[in-house]
Image 1: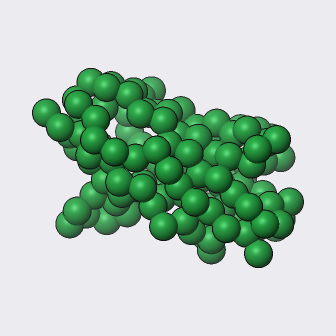
Image 2: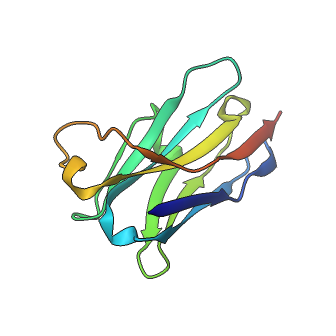
Image 3: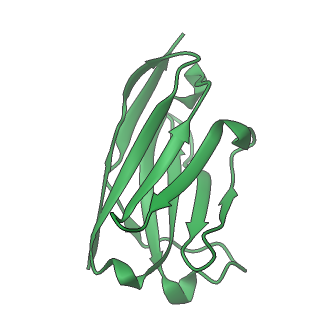
Length: 125
């Protein structure tokens, strides 16, 4: 079993930056892709981006993806989300998710059956 624990959230002034971490533990060899999602109060969950382990490539779902960078430290099994030029509308609970290799084919969106508990990011204007 794999466990995901997010950290790095907090209060940030508009225009600032924040790096979130998602530490994966357990049998992480089974995970073929990992992703970040976010959910603002009263809104649906939004996909931020997915990193594929096999290729090391990342695809992003947010419209202004230039402000977001997903990376991974494979030695430490930590997925990062670097966020720059933060805006109040970036305020949300940020979640890390992971999926097994066979469901990370890069052709269809992974179902992401494993989730962390989230970390809150609040951007003040």
